[in-house]
Amino acid sequence: MEANNRRCFILLELIIYLGFLAGDLFGFATAYLKYLGIVLCFLRSLHQRNRMISLAFAFTLCADFFLLLLDRYYVVGVCFFIIVQIIYLFFLLRHDCRPFLFLRAVAVTLGLVLFVFLNQAYSLNLAVLFYFMNLFGNALSSFTNPKLRVLSLGFILFVCCDICVGLNYILPPGNLYQIIAFGMWFFYLPSQVLICLGSEKLLLYKNR
Image (cartoon, rainbow, N blue to C red; front, side, top):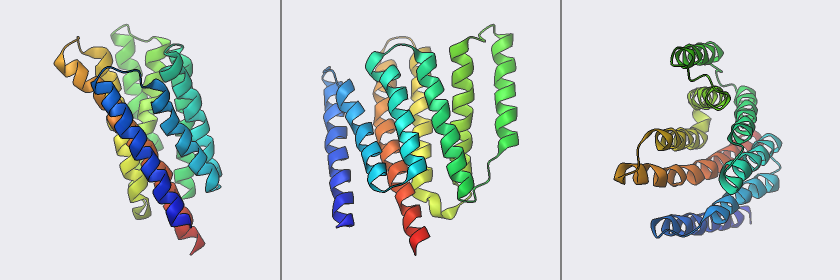
């Protein structure tokens, strides 16, 4: 029964994924379809009674509400994503992963010094810096537990998505810009699905 539910979840996410990729290619509005994909991840985590992952997806929905649906109040959206990464950090600590806290602190400090030197120490840039360094730190942490391979792949795709987001704001309009813009959600929904499924595998290990 549970295997069938998992297959149904993956199939629905695949349909949504292919739907908005096709929509993006042909210039259709796909924001609500993309948001639906994250809603399904949240519902799936509730079904599995995985409280920390459910909480992370709840805040992910809040972040994407501002960044995707409203397309405004970016600092608020990024702050919600910071909360998401803090939840994931505690989740990883619970599963015996190395936190790399010193490395995170050094990376944030160096980024802050760079922003000050470039006169770019705006609230959005600082929020993005703190968020991304913790996302990258969580990705590294996940690799310290061999049981988290699926989750690790999800974090890597998450990092790829946010690299595309950063390049999207740097690059001038053109073909490369369009490819990068397409790449954001090309990586993002698969990352969330893999994080959802990867956390389920940990529940299976725990129940054995």
